Image (tube, rainbow over all chains, first blue to last red; front, side):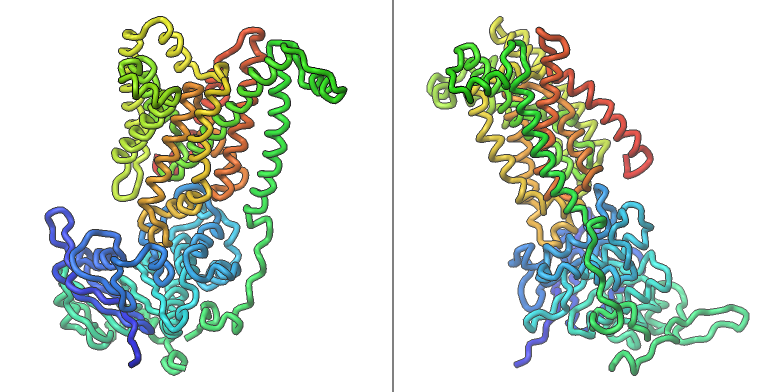
Length: 270
Length: 368
């Protein structure tokens, strides 16, 4: 029997203060695919991610590659799962390289000391190793954090077991060029067999890069499926409370950007 | 779609393999060189410290005597072995523990201003020590015999531990430390300790009063082998946790949640860090009173020189802390000779401006 590796959550409920933020949510992501969690502000995307990574108290079970995460030690989890934080502030004047190296000691890639530099190159920060982290812009800091996280689980598959990248709004404060850099990296990681779960705001990038979309609304799952199934006029209008026409050309006077135009599906599957 | 810039799929294809890290970028190399330099410096200052003092005995003369095979005079032996050597050992122990507990506490609170002296941990340890001096005689005789001379250091340890715990609870929410709350809580803890100590001073008898005056000033003058040997195991144990703490404190700079995701058992690191700070501060306060600013100046200077990596910061802090305290002790002994200044005055005069300078540089930045 071939085992399918998943990140699976069953019956996740979270209460913050008096408010029920998540109500009995089931979630599943498969290794080898990019799964994105989308939804309006306050719908519980980040809360779901935090519950699944064990950052906040919750009811329900989370299983990673078949094992209950509550039974795993922090270092066992760190060896197969890396989590990119939304908040990237850091105490003390570390250099970029010193921050990225923090990922080395955690994962299994400790042997190869060139991984941090390769990771920096992969997020478009080659040559930044000696810079002070605190002097960088918000978007650059975010990519340094991504490089650290990728360093931690550098090889997407180790001994036949996939590893996971968990990303909280990985492209939130990036320019469009680096949004592509980061999403290409995530896409690549999944293509090579790793698992990727990302909370996303940008529906266009979700349409372009996700294999599986989980749409949330008011602490519940509103829809799941392929981008084609979930991102429809009707579902989006209902969830976001405003008309979001899909695959419709705007009036001729308004310029529009279609980053999708650069995607070559043949190259992706190759 | 172009994959050239992000081809982590095939590192050998497309993007070139990055060059090896140059020493200019890698501060670990400089940190190791600094360790060597600090060892030499500590050796030098130790020798100087042995030759400095009110009596005319100089190390050089003693060495000459020893080499020539002459017996040391009783005077020389007493001055060297019973006065200066224990004072030297205590200076090294106290200096190292003050600097390391400062560095560990700053790592734990993710803030370069957290120092046991400033945020009330030393005050808490001092209060417990004073309580032990004044009220220790009320304990049952069996307990007194059992604990013996360790009563004061042990109390100081528990005092330091309790204040660190209270401080951490008050100032840290959801893994983030509020600097303002931390400093204000430190003021409150310090005031409370001060007031309670005031009450105890009224209760104390004359001998106890002399012991207590010593706490306010902070000094290595009371150094004896007994004190060195009581402090040694506690401080040694606290310093021994440093290699384990280094990785955890580095990761904690990312915030508690992110540290956990890199595989750190965060709660265990925090518990051990708090115990280490309490142990090192408590023992230092118990034998030498309140000596300020070593814990804040030393880690700050080292971070400027070689960065905040705790793998090198903690051992280098121990070395530089010991060196600076010995130097301050020599100044205290020389400057008004044959009398002696309390060393706390020297460290405050040298350290307080540095503290103000840190505040000035950080103003407007980093959430103060």
